[in-house]
Length: 245
Image (cartoon, rainbow, N blue to C red; front, side, top):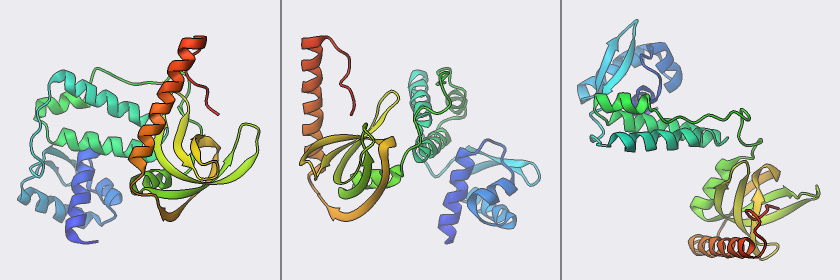
């Protein structure tokens, strides 16, 4: 591993892991030896990072000189902490890990008093009804990257009758509803917009076929259609949200 990459990973670990964090834990997190951790901590200190602690006790990142200082009001800190906590309950391990990383990076740029505010926010998220908000999900990394890159995906999908079909889709967005996660897509088989429940996607593969630059325009059209259908349903029948397939 290149030294700059190693130092970046160590700094990120110091931002995100509960302090004080021992050299052994840092070594396991970053994939290097404990001896390398000792050397790298000193290198980061020399570069301007204010790292407290010592060998045998553990380290904590007091102030991160590599990131510019941020100023947030107390209520803005509460909103940030609450939003990231909500993301951690979405059942998507990659997003949960990213949310923890964001919180660590933001906290590292705050003055010490504000760091305490963000790490001990008053606003909390807890789900009493179940431990996992969403059922087991497919590899959302592939779906997410398909949206980012505007690349078609091949999925095997089981509908509510239990019938499995293979579809080529253009993934447009991942929508997190209350207890249902859906992938908003253009279905190449039906030549129309479709939303696929994530837990019914049995297989997903990248095809490498690009549909750039149509994603943003298609997503805008689809969201407009959903909003119009919802408005019509509410005004004619008084029913709640549109039922998912």
